[in-house]
Image (cartoon, rainbow, N blue to C red; front, side, top):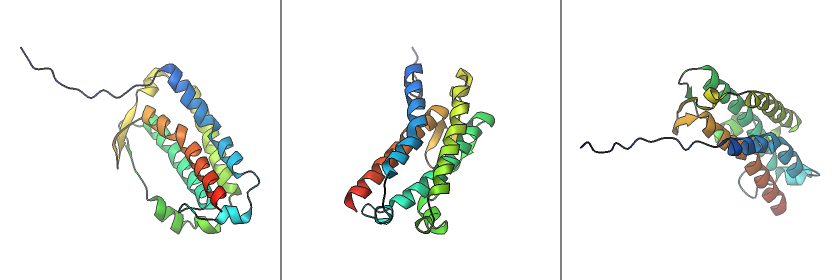
Length: 166
């Protein structure tokens, strides 16, 4: 009798979970706008938690544009390697602390809107696609959705905390 072989099977999401995650993803931009509503210059630049709300918005813009390309690569390329990036270096080199946020908010909105259009048309074969993340290993379309459905909401919470401590 042969010993059972343990094979790692990714934890697949159900159709209902997928729909909920997509809805959360779609709502992300509005959640960030709500967290910023009525923000003062002092609140925008306060850094009680390490990053100011201004820096968080710029991070979101860069991250959302990067995530949009990541999904497209997962769908269009066979076994892509998805590169990580140094968030702190981006913040410093791209001068997050010194730039207005309006264009960054537009970038978040555009990346999310165009990506939501793609998500709405994906097939079961699309949802099964995967590649490798340079920092964390196996990286599927479903992993991507789990991460980015939460990303804007997590940073909106961070903005609210920063505002409350400003």
